[in-house]
Image 1 (cartoon, rainbow, N blue to C red):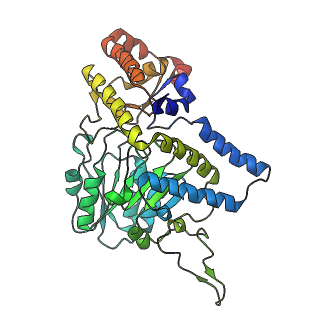
Image 2: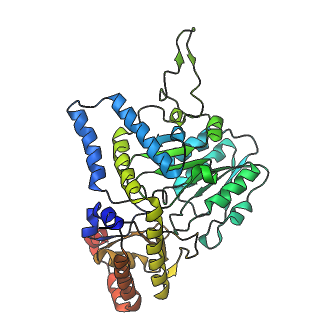
Image 3: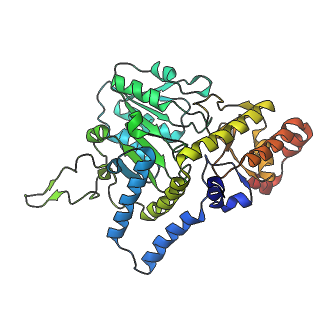
Length: 399
């Protein structure tokens, strides 16, 4: 049994359906859900205590650090990607006249925290991404001497296009601009190197490419940016930070370079236990094997759909491609409905595109089966017309 079969065996859904919805949410491996259950079972029987939880959290910081090449002390646990981005957005030392740059492909998660800063006088510039590709040149058209920060996604949710983070980080460093990356669509299945690439902050939720539970994520933050932040909320998350020996007490500074100061209090310890197990699955398979596998599956699907005449929003260019393929089709609802009826789980985006996103538990044979289904849909107008007929509330819900 090879590594891919072992990885696939962790996901029972693969014995029931073709799950091509990784970019929406990873299926839960029983080993992950059992790790969360064990945490609650221990509490039920009073067999766990805070020191044990803290030790587990420190171990998982190390796992995350090894995955994205960042020091364990630079990892703060969050509820999700949104919280990590908000920590940076609200804590950054903005000055009058500052601006930041995002792009017009971003999910609201990586737009709302930045757009909200307009209330504080920060100019937010939205770069147009030609053809859906967030290129360095497209972003730099909106950069000037007052640009302090750029925020992008590693992989775009609505196209599957991957940004050239190393090149963007190098340009940002040369101009003294902070680079913040939303990594939830790629980190875990594709390589990411916080220190080697020179990324200032990486925010990521655990329930997509990391295969973890909901409600747990992380922020990996470079020491220089951490030193600049003024957190919007604080709690005794690092150590006893109150000097009680002086009248009216004083708040002591946190240890330098320790991202735990951003957590504010108790973290999602059940989620930490689940994420620990999910990261073990990734470690066992190895991102060096996961990445080429999922990229090859994505390329197989992309090429097959193009040959069938579909209009794709995703890119087939090396370095821009990913394991996510998005189809723009006037009958997208019917296509997604037909895929579901044939045992293929995908999702319909707010843009109207059908998104197929593959995981390392998928196989080339499954991709070939998906292409059989999309081929029938493309070539049979009567089938499409039948699928577009109203089916009532039950039919809509099932789709």
